[in-house]
Image (cartoon, rainbow, N blue to C red):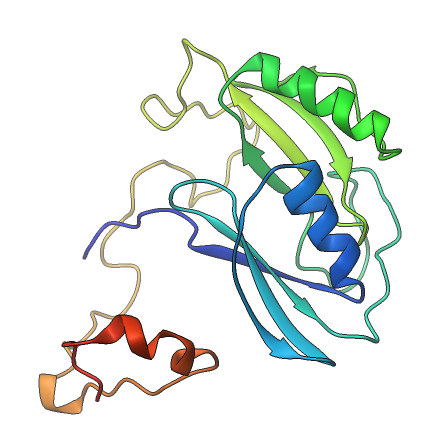
Length: 196
């Protein structure tokens, strides 16, 4: 199987795309690289890094989330706690604390988690966000650390074969790509490529 290259994009929802653009682009400095739609339904994409995007659907009936402390357990259906955005230096964390505070967004102290240092806040939609700077001498991707006092049977860093039914390759004559929302915006850039 091929390797993953990162998170292409995370998609959130907002009822106020204007405030969302002002926060993510103007306050945090993420370029707005693609937007499409019409009143009542839009999707905008912000460049978080050279390989990662953050997207927002604008749905007018969406209300901001109630703020809750990152990592606090909840009862009932739940799918998302927070997003952590990597930063290039510890100084960037302090710059973010100053920017967020000046703009009247809550910002935590810089928290040392051992392998990362983080600042916690919220965007205008109440979406919990974290900014993380990795410790220079600790990389859990290269040297995983398991400190669970009662680890799960499935714990361990490397994928294990034989746990799922083996897939059958999909024959080339049965592979179909269908056009999705926004496809038409890139026709001029697709010159000479297979358009089927």
